[in-house]
Figure (cartoon, rainbow, N blue to C red):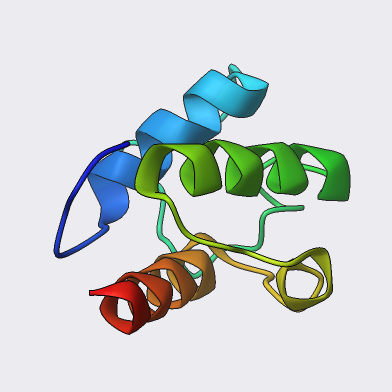
Length: 88
């Protein structure tokens, strides 16, 4: 488990690549974080796998019902950071 005060773009991109790979037509490193996961080629199962990896890595809880409302990488980063602050 990683102890980290802030979860950012680099950590999310790493989790996205590890969980579901990277659509060859999408450059995650330069993608605008306001794009939806669907537009980036990630379906709901891929997003849940990303959340699962983040939960294991950071020791936080990202419930499925909460994740159902997360549509963009930016929203997920905000959610993770909120959870990290809550357990700190």
